[in-house]
Length: 235
Image 1 (cartoon, one colour):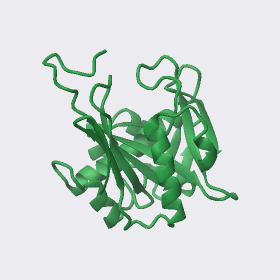
Image 2 (tube, helix red, strand yellow):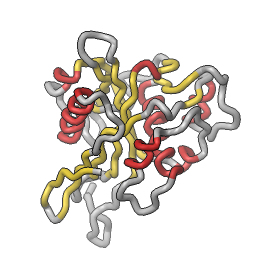
Image 3 (cartoon, helix red, strand yellow):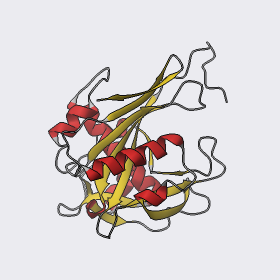
Image 4 (cartoon, one colour):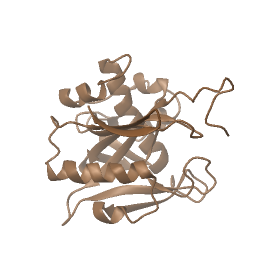
């Protein structure tokens, strides 16, 4: 598969979201990572954080709480159509993709099941009796896949504490699934896994953010390539 359209233009990046679940209960922070199926065209066999592209249904799903204003502002930085709905959809996409790929539902069980969820993954999420929760979500980094790749994403790496996990559905991760293995690994040790380059950078950014106490007013790194030069800017 080519990384260009038939007209020769680079593929337009699709909005996407990734969720990093951090467990800070032990002596050092650990993160949840999954190994992708070897049969995938995109990053086969690599260890990644769960995530995927934003879908229209993510704008329609009910949620508990709201994004922190600083997080919302940073998610809307340097986008064509910034809005509270856009930032909210990014966060909900990360929660949905995590549920689809791992069976882990991030949210709260205090309100019962959401009414009238969109069909598909969100309907299955609601069946677990969980409302997705936005107030616990932080924004770590943004990265646009360089031109020429088989798929391109404008990805936002989000962070949530493991205490926000409300429920887990067993059997989602298996040898035939998108993720064939899940592991909890210390942040420092995770760099020794077979990782995509951007995941390695996100781990470095996470370590720095954790050292700073996850201050939500902090600048966020933005990775992209412009005229063949790889850039690290700030949002």
